[in-house]
Length: 146
Image (cartoon, rainbow, N blue to C red; front, side, top):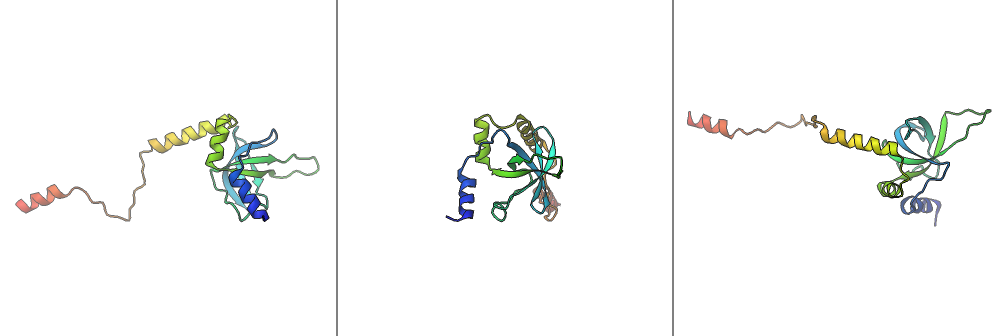
C-alpha cells in the first residue's frame, strides 16, 4: 500500500483523539503556500502549516476543524507559524469527539450562534436574473371584463 493510500485510509477511517499537547482549532482562512490562519476555542489565532503528506490529497477550507500540533518556540528562532495540522476533522469525527466530551465548549457556543443567525436571517438571497412572477390572475381577469 502506497503512502497516499495509507494517509487516505487513516484520514477517513481512523477516529482521531487529541493528545495532551494537541489542540482542536477552527480554520479561519487560507494564507497561501499551505499556511492557514486558525482560531482556538479561547479566541487566539495563529498560523499553521499543512504537512506534505496532506498536500494534493485533501482540501482544508474555511470553517473546517483541525487538530493542531503546536510548535514550541525557542529563544533562538521565533516563527510566525504556531503549529502543524495533524488531522483534518470531518463531521463524523466531530460527533465522536462531542460524544466523548472532548470537544471544546467555545466551539459549541459559536456553532449555536451561527445556526441562530442562519435561521433568523430575514435577508434571503434574491436572484435578480429572473423576473418575478406574481399573482396577476386578478388583474388580467379584471382587464378582460372591461
